[in-house]
Length: 123
Image (cartoon, rainbow, N blue to C red; front, side, top):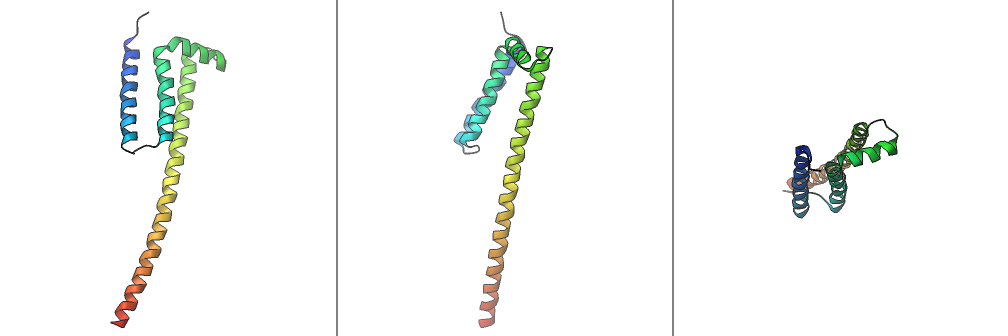
């Protein structure tokens, strides 16, 4: 059985994203846990692209849905929510770090200003 053009395009896109992810890891843009997470996601999408009917039927049977396509939509929506939650956690963590850094800089700036005022009074 031959492959459909959509399967070929999906595999090419997944391959490109894998190469991009590895380059980002080498350049320090993502950490090891990010590589593992994306690798799992790309593997799932690769399996779906290679065996769409078999995977969709297995998921359909597992979830008790009527059609295989419905199963793929349910799983896709679940993965999107997982990614959104992961992004929310990262954004929240970054926000907290920025707030803490801003506080530290403000305290240090105040200390520097106080020292400058003391020096100006002496001089």
